[in-house]
Length: 302
Image 1 (cartoon, rainbow, N blue to C red):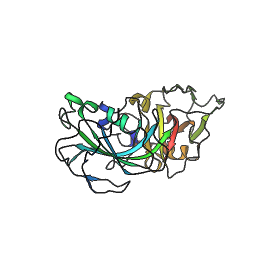
Image 2: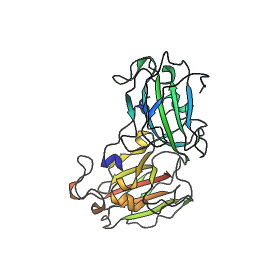
Image 3: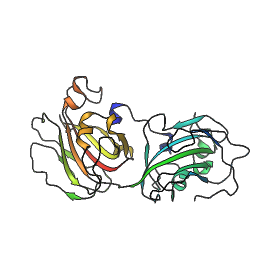
């Protein structure tokens, strides 16, 4: 929902055989060296390594990242020959979720994150053939650039989709949400009845994970439609990746609707205007006084 509150910044990573470089010196972290702090990184010295180099700066004790895991990270990236970042999630205040090994990010990330433990800070030097190659990513990343990343692995192993007990949807006055668990967006069928005046937050699939707290950041897959006409207005499925939101940063209907729900669940949320965008709406996507309908898969929390 932060996508609607404030447009989600799609990191450069999305526009796109780990080897340790024995003896290779990676650029030094000169400030913000602790896990969770925004780092400052020197530019590289000499010629960059020709292979992927991964160095653990802080060793975490969480689960190791496996292929197919959803991982929530903060990161800073810069060119080998520069000390100025071209992208970082720390300034956005929004960790970045990625499915490791699924080709959603550059190959250096898919390979370098494997086996790393949640709670770790790693530094990676990624050669061009595992990054943006000869095409680069103008104007930010020139052709044949070696990239340097510092990555904090905040969480790993989140579910890929809701998984649990399917719940009955017998109230004909409420939308019905599909129960597929194939990583595709579920259907949302909105009835031709008056919208409810109060918040609705019902399990479609009830998971077995811990209950979401109001202070949590949630990792979710979601789809949103307008009650009026069932018109879609936002979907993480369309972007091909889950999203992460701190509940204190989203509309109150989302925060109230997800608090107390179990990780691994799919939840139907119907947000009345008073708990959404009220009389101002969110032009041109959401008209004034719109009732919003969401299907939300809670994949994990931080």
